[in-house]
View (cartoon, helix red, strand yellow):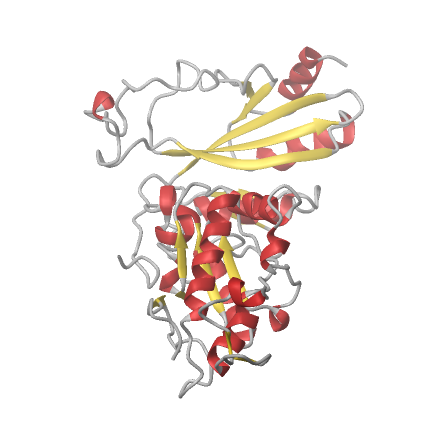
Length: 190
Length: 183
């Protein structure tokens, strides 16, 4: 099985899937069109293509910088959300990546026999990010999804215990969102 | 001759073979050379702390022997980045240690938050949570710096007085502990 075969199999069997314009490094990367396609794609990967190892669940907030403080003078003025980036983007992101108000969710699947890796990408709205949980298929998704929920606020519907995993209980909000505003607590006083 | 080694602590009766000392000096001498720190590392500073325990730097020669339980420890070395979620466990471990107990803040993170000062998750100095006796700057401090910090703590221990406080460390919830030391 080659990476081209994997990619074409997914594109043929998952409705609305397309090869991502911005692949993760040079791995086969599939962009899903809607959250309900995720269980279909994951089941196809696990049961038919042998990708039995969920390596990673994470997200990218493409909102862009929301404030100028903390950036080096060389890169100011900061282009704000919905504008084309003047800042250099990472090579992995590719030229079609622009700041836009979406959360880009990312799943990485591994095949331990053929040593292939597949990435799934799915854009969800920042206002109400909700996708199906993969805990039924991959038990390893449990803590990964809790972490993504904790840091980005993504709701994984069907997760048995979607609670904070990293940040302390008193921390309000989801710190890796670009518009996160920190509420000072007892440990912040100077 | 032991009198040469501890001139300020021990004195001989003129012409006799009896050594005299004060209770304070005698007890402080014992405390000074048996500082047992808790085996407790939070981040990369702990690597330097482990190096200080190992043979090249040899903390044992100062009587510093790591203990696995807070019940047996005199000293807590906060070696590493001190995150807010760790605050409650550290406070609990600190209160499990018997008096007199000492705290060394090792490295920039434990002193003031260091490079993570602006982060949402890091406490801006361990003295926001427990009292600190000695601050060691560095990122991370070398083992020599940690050994120097323990030597400064030894000087502080020699200034402790048994009277009133019974030899306990100064009671403080948090902040920098009085440099005069003792109650």
